[in-house]
Length: 538
Image (cartoon, helix red, strand yellow):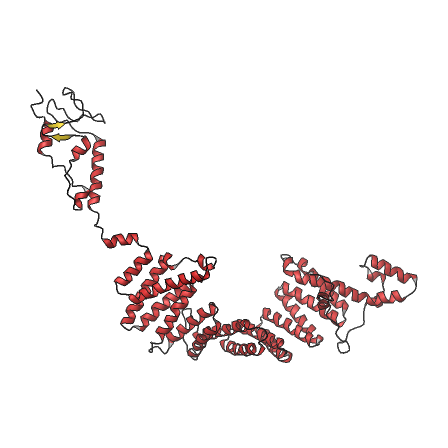
């Protein structure tokens, strides 16, 4: 009897079947699809002409139960029980939220899909072309092709393959695209200042990375071209462009090309009080850069190009004197003396060294004072002026000991011992070479490895000097036919450390030395290290 009478549930579903409908995702994007009831989706009810057919057991005497054990409806009494199904309501709300969020998604155009699919480099190139920046695109694409060609020519084993290509560095590509487009827009309105600033910013940015120095050179070259069109700043920007372009060429090793820009930078900054961002005068910066460039060219020339190297060094010396930077001036002064000495001009080298010695004493520069004393001592020894050589070596040793230059002090003591042994003052020579040999162990905190060559030379000179000291006593007792003399020689040979007790002082100590009547002997160390006559095997 219940089949002929419609139930409350069937009437409600049949009469208001569109009240709880939400358009699906496909309908939001223009697809027509039959609406589906939320109640029909989540409660497994199906509609037909006869009413509602459900899969539940038709026991009208008992109320229907859901999974959560809550009373849904009582079809027998046609009364709807309160729905307290938390699980069912949460599921419906979640699904409704998803459908609502899907309906709010923007419509994807072909450009949006391209942004997802294409790499950043290609997308940026498309953007530049779409916006009309054809020159910026050409620059960016040309740099990318140039890098790929250099990598191909260098081969896969080259260090260039450890540097990622520009297409794989989105930050650099984005920065270049931004400033290149700004420069192109400024060039169209003939704003040379903005073009200069854009290229200069790119060059300074890439100058900080060792892998991007070629990019810095590329953009500094454009900076120089843009600066030639600026005529309202008394050539300030032109000088700055020459500064950066010449310096980046020098860093990359193109010294002759760099000297052209650095000379122009030096010329433009004469008698100008321009300052850079750090507060330094551009005139001083130009002198420093040009002097360093000349120094680098001197070291790049072959050693037998004496005249060319000396001419460049004299130019660098004049520029360094104008610059007023003592650090650069001192290094060029020493280099000039070394070049004159290697070109067989010892007298000119001696004049240069003595002038530098006087100036170093005036400035109180202990480091350069020690270096010039050593150079003067060696040069005086070559000129057989041993007295002056020993005087400069004493100044060298005292300066090193006063300022704690222990490695240089060891070398000075060893050179003093060799000089005294050369003129025949064996007692003084033995004193200085012993000091050089014991120096690494006399002062705490010193590394013996730093004194390796000095210690080995001092050890050799100790033996040579003691042999020279014993020469007179040994030969005198050997020529004596008496047995006591032979016994002393045998005892000393068995233990050669007690010559002071075995031999009288008159036989060991030599008379005072006068440099006027003493002819210098051979250099023992040079003779010992000679490959044909030496007794040292290294």
